[in-house]
Length: 515
Ligand code: GLC
Ligand code: CA
Image 1 (cartoon, rainbow, N blue to C red):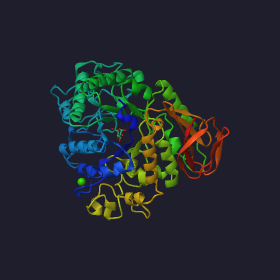
Image 2 (spheres, rainbow, N blue to C red):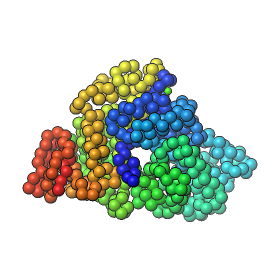
Image 3 (cartoon, rainbow, N blue to C red):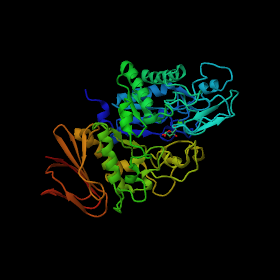
Image 4 (cartoon, protein in one colour):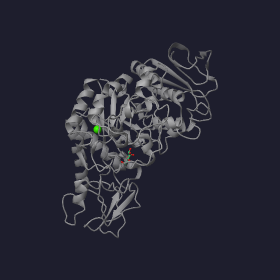
């Protein structure tokens, strides 16, 4: 049977800012349930929720204090269960965010591990034997905490200073305090994380987006032991929860797919050249026509080849860690960016609000967001108070919304046949109809990306779809060996495809079924 992921288009929800159902100024789970029909109307059929668990919120919830309890500000475990059920009723799937690499300093495991008295959690984190002995300087360890506990030792952190790294052991052991990957304490950490997955899968969640998935085993050359660890997790899931989906924040699909992940994310940092397309001085998708997609295509091809043509990579419109796309592209340019995002292999991810071209705001840091805070502002639903996000007084909102003139709203976007929102809806509907455009279809670039247009062939069985995108304001043309059978989609003016040549007006897209 076909896997649901093949046909999925995801919508990422940052729960704090989506919809506040009880007027306390912050988004919540009942609020998400109320807006499922909106997401479905756009055409998305899957959700990724950022962490919604008990946390001191020093990193917006990526600092978990209880993996098995919904943070009261979002609702209850029962609310999350009803979100799963309401989504399933609409043919949608839900992925939670699993943060296996670290916890908050407030997690009871960490508190126990800080005790001078040896206990079952003493080895749950990475501690040296004395505060004077450094734990930093090893790959995958980003810093340390010292002098904070009765226990004598320094403890490794994974990201921010308040996110101590869980102990999955070291692949290469060079100090006596480093656990082996198969030590009892490292295996106990794995079991604990398996229990967390089982807990939510039992309640109806469909799988996880896994945070910093490549970071678990320390000093792990080539990620060999981290890959083995995930293979073991996958074996466990295959037995107990064969349908459970795992997507990785890793950015190296040759490693993550070998580890058993279904798909990996194309990341905005590292080697992907994702930023060349959308967020740099001269983005390829800007109408100024000065960008290059060449390095992106080269890396993309390399990754497909390294994964035997699978290379399934989720390309996001944005996420809670990046500046909003709208900061670099206007609404018209974004239409072409979405024509790309929604016609590439892997599962596309739409970051809430990008479908209405929400802007990147200048905001001081909230919950460890720093510059990311500007992309985490409340969803703008309509022109009522607080854009319909919340009934709370404006100064009680989680983050102040976009108050500038012309701030977009979902209601206006849905009512306007020429809006980005409507274009996205059309593109998703086409993707749902055409297997060649879906996650597992083939892709072959017919251009090097150094110039315009960008042209690629998507295939599934005998179905062939030629995707032609010209983000530049200038007309563009290229040689093209395919003859058109049927025009499936067009945006902007329509050029031609005949006699071995493709011609395109400026700022246009055309998808052709070809022979
Ligand atoms: C991931 C998350 C990011 C978080 C970090 C630490 O990159 O996407 O928001 O701050 O991991 O968990
Ligand atoms: Ca609320």
